[in-house]
Structure formats: structure tokens, C-alpha cells
Length: 179
Image 1 (cartoon, rainbow, N blue to C red):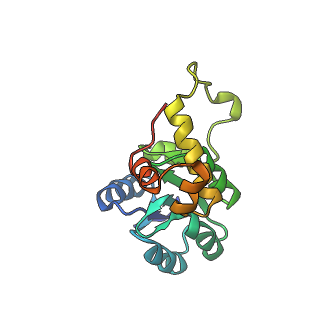
Image 2 (tube, rainbow, N blue to C red):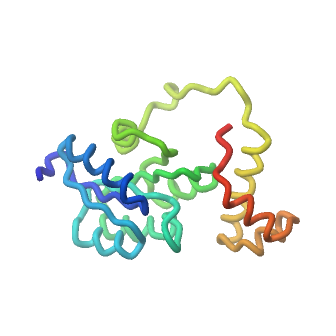
């Protein structure tokens, strides 16, 4: 397989999703390699020397934010994009502060991911939504920020938010509200 466009490491625990992405990137000239957990991602990154890394935020047993700096240490020239179905402002800020090139919400097409690797749209090109963010979405964002501030400790976060730990766990198990 040609790697004229580069080498991309796909880190996601969904094998079907990574297989679809691998085919799409392969058609665009990328050599691809998939990893389904943090340990595999780190060992493959050291061996594969990717030019691009697509990292899921929610990995088995850990967060993609935990291994993000380690991946960039193993492949310092690589561009890294975080792709997640559990997006929040807090994790987006954390990812970019840790060195991610960009941050995308699932679902995303191969073209959107390639655009994110290239730096995305110019700030003036991003449309501003006419509707304000919903209260439910604001709650989700706030919970994510407090969770991050407490190093992902559920009990400490529940105390900081003044809610029962099980209530917080139920809220975290739900997918985030879109708007």
C-alpha cells in the first residue's frame, strides 16, 4: 500500500468504524494502521511512526486525553486530531492544550477529518448558530468541566456539584445533548 499521502494511526475501540475509515484513507493514498486500546496505540505508534493520528476520546479503561501527550512524544512530527462522540468544551480545550491539531465530533467524514488535519476552516468561515445552547447542553458542559477539574474522580465531582454520585454516573452514561 502506498503511503504517499502519509501514515495514519487510527485509535478507536470500534473495529467497524476504524475499518471504514482505513478504507477511506487508503483510497486517498494513506498507509493506515488501527489500534483499539491505549496500550496497542502506544506500541503501534512507536513502530509505525505515523504522520497523522486520529484519536478517540473514549477508550477502554482510559481517556484519549491521557495518552495524547505520549502519542505525540512517540511521533512528534505527527498531526493529531481527536474525534469523539462525547464532545465538550472542556475536553476540546484540554486536547488542544495537550497538542492536538484539531477536535471533531462524531460522526465525521474522511474529508472533514482531512480538513481538520489541515487546520480546519478559517475562524470567519465558521457559521454562528442562530439558536442559543440549551440548558441540558450547558449542564453537560459544566459536568465535564468539573469532572476534568477533579481528575475524572466521580465521587469528588459529585461532591463539587452537590449531587449524589449515582445520579452523576447516570448523567455521564447518557450521550451528550447536541444543542
